[in-house]
Amino acid sequence: MTISFDAVKDFDDYIETYTYEDEEGYDGVHDGGIKGLRSDAPESAVKAYEEYCRMMAEAEEQGIKL
Figure 1 (tube, rainbow, N blue to C red):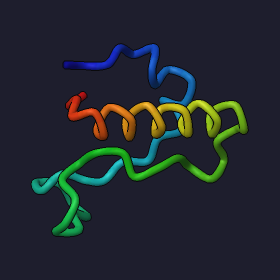
Figure 2: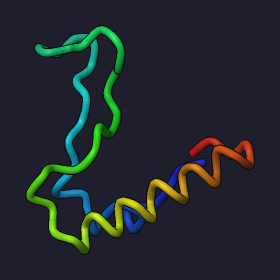
Figure 3: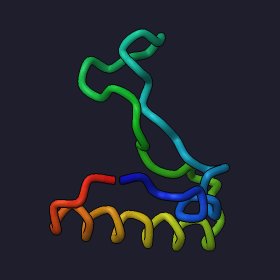
Figure 4: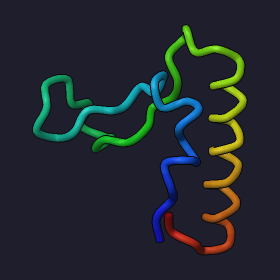
């Protein structure tokens, strides 16, 4: 299952990501993915990101892979 862009559109411009294995700065642990939000993210983006994290956690608890 996938999620729509609507789930991330309110904070997409402020996402910080982990690098992939073949990229400079790879930490040897994480292979891409969302690290968090930049420190300059507005409160509206922070709230939208928190809701996204809640949605992802709830889906994981129910065994749904998004």
